[in-house]
Length: 363
Image (cartoon, rainbow, N blue to C red; front, side, top):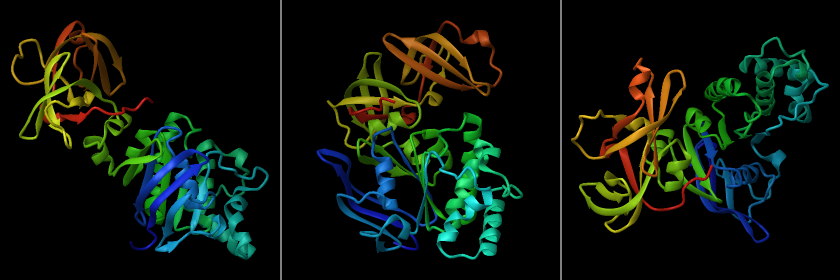
């Protein structure tokens, strides 16, 4: 523990008979951009509300900077919370919105104005302080909400799906803005989202939640490349999934008998011969190998059903028996007519992961 680490120890939340958050241990390091990612109803907002003090945990302890927050109200915690709806005051000019929390702390008017203008410059809104929130764009209002939260100099800024109301382009722009603001201020950001792209783009580390439990904590790369459960594997990024039974495990590679024949992939934790299993391979790791390619493991003959152009990427969807196989290709100028019809697709065993069968993501 150091600085303003946020530490949850055995924290749970029950509402009557329903357990929203099962006992959870989690340390969020001071100064990191930490996302809690999961589908709606998984308990992520409940954790945020417990950290901010709007909910008291049913059990366990939350400490910030080594100090227990038990019995300390929201306004006395070193945290600030940004809601989805931003809750800006429409009749107040922007600078007064930003300075609002300073007035309650007895800061003199001239100092409040100076501090507000400083923060507006920090969030790239210099010269906008005199405007009303309604005169600003959605992305600008978002930045005002961040500046207002930072005005009270919190150690921890809590953000509950703050970009969900914005359109895609603006959302992508604001991801970069928020990450940049976090880097410049050094404030710990705890960011709640159900959008995996958002979490992967912005976060130093991510906790993936499902049904009130944290299933994995790691960097974006760790969660994407080495998911700890079938749920994480299917919730974060796209997957081709093949069901089957493990025939053998040798040298860290598991052979799985599936409806499409024997396929091989890296053996996940505890995978053994005889296990019901899922083999996962990302669409960008699957290649069109050409009809003449007979060699190597993991070769499947399939028929192209659809080709989706995304600009810099081409997504192919093929069918082999009952299986649909997605292949992501970079749009490197390959002729359009080469992708129709039957193809042999393949992937390296090292690019696939075999796990014991378990719950997969529905969203």
